[in-house]
Image (cartoon, rainbow, N blue to C red; front, side, top):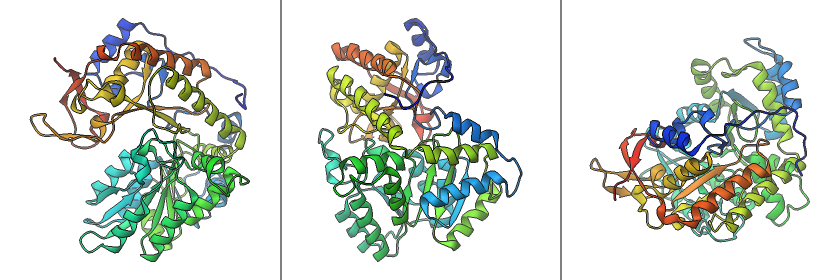
Length: 455
């Protein structure tokens, strides 16, 4: 059962199919542009969408809003220092701000950043400074149905080859995303993290954690990695941070707050460069674009998130939804993770070609039939077309991510999601594809406009 009781409730919108159809047409079939009051179950993202606890709200009431050197900053600094072990800590208003500051300070144009899988904003911030973002997930990640427990790992053989051959494009950093969101929410093993750190150290390349979901990664390590069954998630997390040279974090995930993030570093010179840029673009180094109450709530969230009872329930409710989806006849990326489940839309809708976007088609159907908002992770997200709309590059898989907000929805909400999927799966051939009418050259999925494909 949930290790909490509900103290405050918020009504959710209940709309008609006609209202949803009109709303989707109005926003040119871009689910990001829907108003929140047009969505019944919102699984678009787990970023900043969680429910804060009574203890977090109480901590926020103690927020010190002094411009410099606030008590909130020092409370936050002590908590994050104990967790990560990094001597240099800089708050930022969210993860992509931390990425921008770190990459601008660390990278030089023409270099490469290697990752198990970059998330979309991470990739964008690498490319915006003139660098290449290169993904080398482990071979097991290619089999979406495999029960392999650590499909978030990086390919160590490929990494060693890249690090040994840096003449054309030097490697400026290796970013390890835990858990591997772009790779289906799969965890990274401590063995893989340790061996990656050893390779990076040998070649004098910094290893940086994208630690947005560090606690969920730690939980899965304690469940499935030999030698860690008697460790607590907190102990595993502390070890992971100390293996790396630094981290970037969106606290909107495993900080369980609505806004916030940070940079943690061992290198004092790099930290100083980051601090100068932070002050110029985000705010003074002791608030980094955040209110004092945000820092206090983040500190409390970072303590709560490694509680075994919290993580056990999060894993249980994800497993409950995963089994209901399987029972509905829809395949997911296996094994089921914690922060999201990834539907195999390409397998459910084989009649829709990649560049009519089966993932987006399924996401639209979830909204039209059940008021459920989700996110496509397929050829709309990763694909490319020429100026005439002809395919140049397709995604390796056509997926839909159901991101699970923390402490927000109950099992009956998720049963509604599964039942909606079951209804779609009864007649998948009735689902049609889409074509792009307008798009941005970067991060196009956020602002894209589409229309139903003809024929």
